[in-house]
Amino acid sequence: MASRKKEKFDAILDAAQKVIAESGYHNAQVSRIAKEAGVADGTIYLYFKNKEDILISLFRERLGDLVERFHASVRETGSAGEALRAICEIHFTALENNVELAYVTQIELRQSSLELRKAIGEVVKTYIKLIEDVLAQGIAAGEFRADLDVKLTRLLVFGAMDEVVTSWLIAGRKYSLAAQVEKIVEFFLKGLKA
Image 1: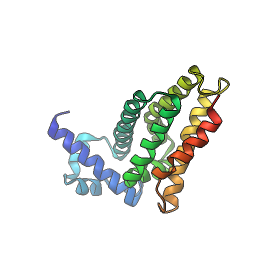
Image 2: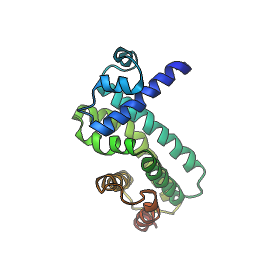
Image 3: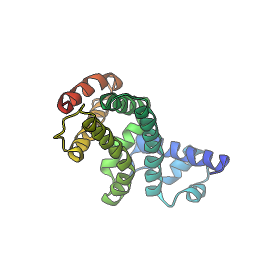
Image 4: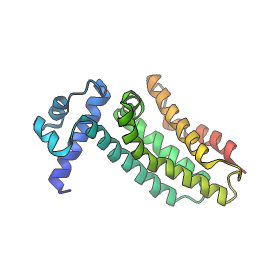
């Protein structure tokens, strides 16, 4: 994507993230997203088919960035336990530092249509696959229990992290999300270790 076109694309996604976090997906008007992005209403449709496409693109771009950070961090770790800690740390720190994205990913996704959730689910699959790979690495190295059901465990790990963020938002962000990493990883490792 050309530099100027990419800038507008990113500006629209930033605006959509802000508007959806403030108003909710169903109340977020494309015209308000355009105004927030500083573009004409029609410009939105040069980049996106509709509001659903904006939300899917927002997930694809933002979660794609996170997954890239996860992969880079996991490559630098020496064990599956360290990799799991890195994933949790990036996940919680990134969402604590970007509360709008946390609201969109945690609250708004659950209020979207089934079709929209399925489309966004495709984006989330790469994240869940990474957790699965870390678990399989831990089993292969003898670090994690050999009897783990990897497919079920990856969902439990992802679901637990997801719930921690949702509870943090609902509780009014009264504590540091990133400060929960050690306790959460310790809990995971007690259940996973061989």
